Amino acid sequence: MQVLDEVTDELADLVRSASRVAVLTGAGISAESGVPTFREAQTGLWEQFSAEDLATPEAFDQAPALVWTWYRWRQALLLQVDPNPGHAALARWQHQLAATGGDLSIITQNVDDLHERSGARVLAHLHGSIFDHRCVDCTKPADLPAPHYDGFAHPPEPAEPPACEACGGSLRPGVVWFGEMLPMNAFDSASAAIRSADLVVVAGTSGIVQPAASLPLLALESGTPLVEVNPEETDISDAMDYCLRGPSGTMLPAVADAAL
Ligand code: BV8
Ligand code: ZN
Image (cartoon, rainbow, N blue to C red; front, side, top):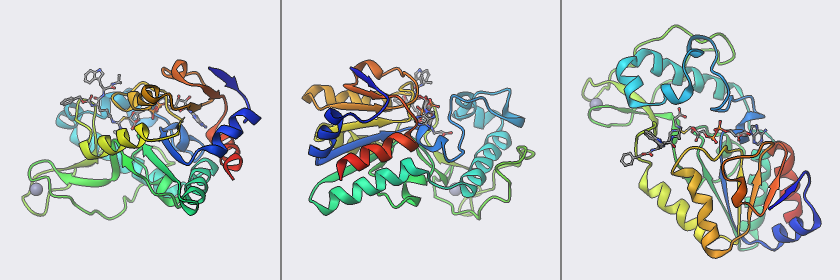
């Protein structure tokens, strides 16, 4: 494993020669947009809970208003921020490869839409989308107006989740909670993309949450080079060929430039 603070000539050659790239992103790629990562402490009303405590079916059963409002408040923040240069670099690289017969698959653990808003196509949202809602009982999806919260202000008072228009059941966020299965089609297409890649990049993830964190390790089966982009060491750094130690908003543009 080489720990680098910039894209070296050796890494640039590897990037330039890749035509089927798979990228796994985590909360860190949205950090420079102003979206707190999961590891950072919660604020306000939720400071006494960890995100992992709130992102569970049990928490929603016990305190539906608290959990529902946490998601609506997080939606509000996402509507108030923009994609950052890290998202833009992946979109640029994806367009560049598509124009030359190659492909860049984005597999994200994030429930935000910042990849899409930077003009990229996302192959798999492993943990769903924060802007999706569905009924707990009849599972019917529900479109809701944007929340009227300020995502930068103090978290709002909890409000009960609305009722499903079709059956009167309670709506829930359309995300995958801890203890819930990942969408199999997303997980399967992510696995296939990593298995057929000639370069795998892992950006902005602590490598803690399973089974997502094990996906990049599929590259080891075929000897496909692995590159990590993260200012910190992670649970999967040891499996990497290159660790680019820096923020994705700086490092991913440098990687995308090397691909041109
Ligand atoms: C499953 C949606 C099984 C919700 C998320 C005990 C009981 C039950 C389950 C388990 C258990 N032990 C283990 C498990 C499995 C569990 C798990 O992994 N737990 C962890 C805590 C150990 N996994 C699950 O439960 C999964 N389901 O296993 O089902 C099953 C099987 C059969 C039948 C039924 C069930 C479901 C996991 C999905 C959970 N949902 N999100 C929501 O968003 O509210 S995961 C959530 O956490 C995020 O979406 C994200 O994916 C994850 C956090 O990970 P990261 O993205 O890596 O973010 P993190 O904050 O950790 O790290 C940020 C990184 O960025 C850091 O490394 C930092 O250095 C870096 N960074 C910071 N700034 C920058 C940067 N990098 C680059 N640039 C920067 N500027
Ligand atoms: Zn319903």
